[in-house]
Every structure is written in C-alpha cells, then in structure tokens.
Length: 445
Image (cartoon, one colour):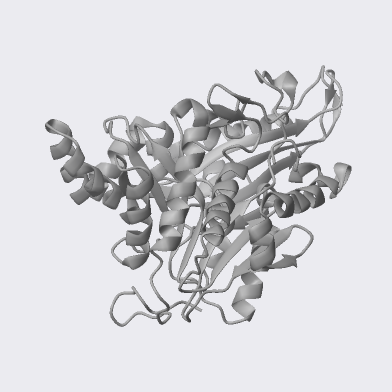
C-alpha cells in the first residue's frame, strides 16, 4: 500500500494509475472481502463496500482514506517515503499513519471475521476515499449517495484521535483520544494592489507591505477563547486517573469553562488550539524581481474554526482585525465546525469497550479534533460521528504525519485490528434510528 504513491495533490500530473493499482491491490490482499462484500465505486476515487448483516436497523460506517500528501527523500527521510520498508518493529513510509494504516486494520479485521464465518447483526459499510487530502469530494459523494438512499448510520467512525501517552502537559496517562467533533476549516486569500515601479522610490505602503501588515494584525487574540463541552468532558474523564493536585485541577477546570479557556490559551500549542480559532498564513506571493515594486501581493491563510463561530462570523472578525479597506479577503473554501456527538450513549460506549480490548491501559476520552476529516460530510444526517484511529502514536510519530519519517509499529497494527474485530463482534442488533439518542430527540436528516 505504501509503495503506491497515491498523492491526490499530484493527480493532474500523475493521473489515476496508482489509485487504480491500489484498488486492485485491495482485491488481491483481501480475497474474502472481495468475495463477500459488495463494492460500489463512487466517483473515480471513492470505494464503498457493503457487508450485509443478519438483521435490520441502521448500519455502521467505518471510514478511511487511501490518498496521501506529497513526500520526497530530499526532505530528510531516513528511508525513502514510498519504499514501504519494514524495520525496527515498524512499517516506514508516507501514509502509514495517515491513513493507510487505519485503513489496513479495518480490512484485516473484516477479512479475519469473514474467515471465521462471522456475520454482523446489522449492515456494515466501509467508506474509503481517495482525495481526503484534497478536500474529500469522494467521501462527500459517498455521503450524498447514502443520504439519497435514506440510510442513516447508527455510528460513523473515521480517522482522528489515537492512543497517546501524554494527552495534556499535566496529564501523563495513556489515553485513547476519541474525537466527538471537529473544528471547521476556512482558507482565505488576502490581497492588495498598488502602483508598480522601481524599488528606488517606493510609496509609503506597497502592496506587499499592506498584506504583511494585515498578517501581523491577525494575532491569536482576534478570536475569543472558549472551552467546548468536549474539552470539559475530556478533563472529567482524566480526573479519576491522576493523583494529587492534578486531580483537583482537572475537576476544577471541568466545572469552570471560562478558567479552562484562559489556561489552555495561555499554554499555547495544541491546548490553545482546542479553545480558539487558529490562524496560519501558509502561502505568500508578491513580486517578480528584487528591484521592482509588485503591483499585487497576496497571502493564503488557513484557519481552523472553533465552535461558536461560522465561516461568516470568522470572515467578519478577520475584516475587523485587518482594518484596511484596500486589502481584500476572498474565501477560497470552507466548512463550519461540526456538532459534537454524544458521549453518554451506546455508540461511544461501543468504541470505549473496543478500546479496552485492544489497549486495556488506555483511558477513553472525548476531545475536539483540530483537523478536518472526511466524516464531516455525514453530520447533516448522521447523529453519531466519531474520529478515532486505533493506533498508538508517540509525539514523534504524530510529528511524522504530513512530516518526515512517518511510521507505524507492527504491534500497533495488531492492536488496531483487534480493536475493529472487537467493535464488530459486539455490534448490537438492529435498532431504530433514534437508538441511543436523548429522550425526545430524533436523528438529523
């Protein structure tokens, strides 16, 4: 799987050949899945498998994606990123964690259960997208297809959190971080124009300096810090597993969202990203020569929108912060934050029970995911959407996602397969669409 460079960002140059080979490879590696599950290709890059269950009710949807981000040896990889080398008890290469490893453990579990003659009590869909790293049109098409057919998943599980050894700076317990919601995504372009000319006689503000000033004004404090419900639930989940002052601190923070927001914002990094919208300039463009004033300058900014904000309100805050009518703000693409899925019902309990089988020492904990996943397309009609890849990841391994030296341990793959086998084995029999919802609630359609 790793040896096939399914880089969705390079589709225009490389074409679909590697993606087609990947689909054929799945058929070769998993003959029972190929024989017993119905496969439907949705767009050129979406694979939807249906495993028919023995009963009725709403299905389980297990998601993953098989495209990856670019990688090159010159970036400093210790082993070539698409060699797929097995060494030191791990598989090395681009996609081992994001997201071919999580895809593999799903298929391994299904193949093994088929070999045992197991039939799930309700339908199971495997939704695999080939362009998640490029906005996820395939997963969106799969979601649309199920929606059009009136299929409301009982549970959707995609990539996201993992099993980590230190989830917070002051919490040192193994934790299975289960994403119950995710921040929104917004990409904007800031641009300005001015008269060009020779650099020896510049105006007070050039196009480049206007854009630079605008970026400097986009400080973290542009957006308020708020502690979402999932963060408070996460702190409450950790409290019984720590001792001394840390336990008291977690209990206080779980009950005081305003204090949690201020503390996490002050900590910076991942804690700060949990409580506010983040702003990250990613691309800059201006000028064609060192001594020529650029007539136009632009910057692309990527934002991850916290709960309580929308695309519209985020752009409004950006305009107020920039304070320059000559800087235009263009929305390139975006999606609002997702609602948070419940943690006190059968769906979350099923995930937690499977975690206990595969990682008995890990504390299942809800959290807000800061990145975007293909599962975001299911929220408009699925009441329970979670993000958890059942793989153990150290801080160094997490840094390899979209970075260098990405790798997954073989032990972690074995445990991931065990997780999915346990989840599928304990899947409850078919139930109505509102199963597990609070009294009086109905599934969103």
